[in-house]
Amino acid sequence: MTHLPLDDVRVIELGQLLAGPFCGQLLGDFGAEVIKVEDPGRGDPMRQWGREKPHGQSLWWPVVARNKKSVTCDLRDPRGQDLLRRLIAEADVLLENFRPGTLERWNLSPDELHAINPGLVITRVTGFGQTGPYAPRAGYGSIGEAMGGIRHVTGDPGRPPSRAGISLGDSLAATHACVGTLVALHERGRSGRGQVVDSAIYEAVLAMMESLLPEWQQAGYQRERTGPVLPNVSPSNVYPTGDGEAILIAANQDSVFARLARVMGAEALAEDERYATHGARGANMDELDGIIAAWTAGHPADELLRLLHEGGVPAGRIYTAKDMFADPHFAAREAIVRVSHPDFGEVAMQNVAPKLSSTPGRVRTAGPALGQHNEEVYGGLLGLSPEEITGLSTAGVI
Image (cartoon, rainbow, N blue to C red; front, side, top):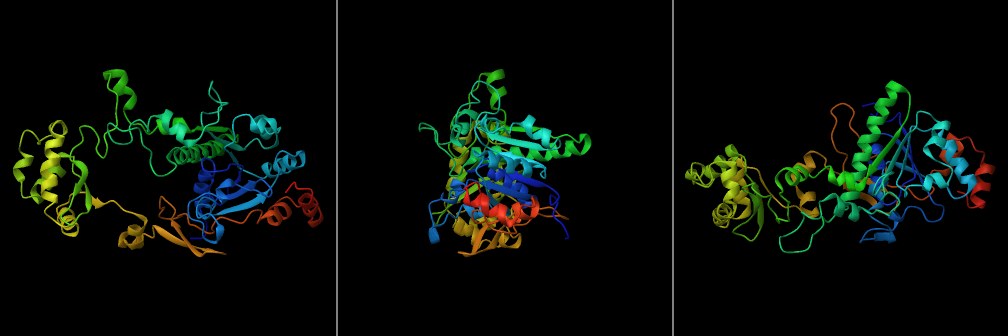
């Protein structure tokens, strides 16, 4: 492979935390030159986030800032704004996740930026979007998850709404922003014009909510929290094993359920009118789950998984990070990579997804030090002299 699929795309990333920067990570994974612009002296707060901090450093930063270059620039200073305009003239994409109106206050509105670079794609990630009555509100991923509907249906019945153990709303908004960016770049190839990509966290969450809206509109049905199962989808649950583990089995399709019944030595279940069809199994979910749980509890986990896999039944353990490092499939597909780092030596992280057969993405560098690429970008790309760079640094602009 001689090139990466996006290595002709230059992205200026102004975002911070996760909703914008994860979009930049995705673009950088496939070769885009992502120049991350950070506040001098402080940088992106993600540099300090995370529970574990060996060497006093975040373990989140090497992942979300991988494949990026870091420059510093005070965008509140007119001199910093002028530097950004010069960067914009050389860019394909501007990515930001400030509150709506922030760029406009800095005299960096889309109209002003398109006057500099008509082909610029401006990708904006916010809690509520650039328009509408809620647009000015501060919007974090957790609020978008709540308003987008996923919090209401996550957790156990009878308990308050729960959350996933990751920043799901931010990541969904960033993923949709990445899709929008690529679509806008494709359109620019035909029209020559850039446009604004407006990705709202609550809408990105809403987009994942399957048939929740028509179920209410057409049938008056409100989805609720159902713990580890989906209503009327059975069997698809977590089941006990004889050695104290838990195995997830998903055999809700008719043909797959018939295979499960054979593995259980209970072929009659697939013919029983209570379980023979998808609808019947859904209506009798609790009873069927009890039958399956009684069978799984009689087998240790390894034996149970062998029987299920040999029988063509989808099943698996619920993995922790430790399990992922030990799994041969993860290793064979290089799902985890180790990246050189000046302090950690090597830092392990998830690899690029999805895999492309001819021009796959790859992790080339871990997250950079603050301002690590000031001279390369300001001197090499913009042509500033060493004296100019020193002067801007001394003045606190970069």
